[in-house]
Length: 421
Image 1 (cartoon, one colour):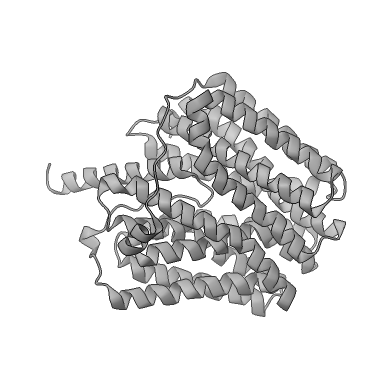
Image 2 (spheres, rainbow, N blue to C red; image 1 turned 135 degrees about the vertical axis):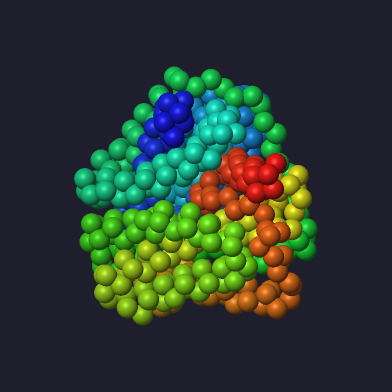
């Protein structure tokens, strides 16, 4: 771990500042939208635009990097992010904010692709697992810390919009001054939706539904908080609980996934998250119940995404995994675009509790479908299951492929040790 920090501290510090900026602007817009009088539908459009931009950026960034290089792409996209963050309070209009979120989603996706490729290139086979673990930790800590920064200013003013712009601008300095461009890389062509469905119907349907649940929680949690009448500190802690749950559960559930039928674990995780969401829906007047609900949902949804990827890989050859992951990320992105929109509709129809109702319904459908698939297909067996690679849903294809490569190599080394090789 010390070796990884010694070689990648500048990159990780820059990523931490980036995540602070991204986490702060997402929550801040949800709170400021209520102050500006935006409707729930308008806020759902604004939040959905980020995921549309993110999906587009993840598809186009590799081509941009091949044409002009890592440094130029990183600097150019970062400049756009910083500019849009300052422009939000100057143009308090739902359509202007939607365009801004679209641009920011696109740019953050490209920045993540670039940063993840740098991190992967600087890692060795021995340190790749530690690098990925630190990367995920930095992502989560950045978003969690951003919720605390939100309390340092007035969301009705300009300062809190200037802060993330400054954080993003500063983040480039340690990265660009300490890291040289990595070699050009080839983007992976995703598997077709038909091929994905034939390979693993559960993985395709599941990752689509989980994408909608995650984007609802990431994009609409602050909107829920304002409509539910929570104070700013309460909203901050409420959102933080989603990520506390994710950090605590990601690796333990990954360990368990290598020892039981993954479909059973998928069903159990989805049921647990669905029940957690229903706690928030039924007991939403209790702030403690909201925190418990957020923690349970966060603890289940991120590991569920990694588990669905691992289950798909159980039916793929090693050289097919990159294409399978790219296809799964595309499907997850499609689900994420619709998540805030449908959550906004649910909240309009049922009140703030529609936030939890929508998430709960998606996850319970996931659980039911996993149970159905258990009746339609025999288990691969724990001995035949592939390696589990823990990743966050905010990661791009570069990190996902690196995590899978590391997990595959680790599994091969463990098998060799068991056989005395």
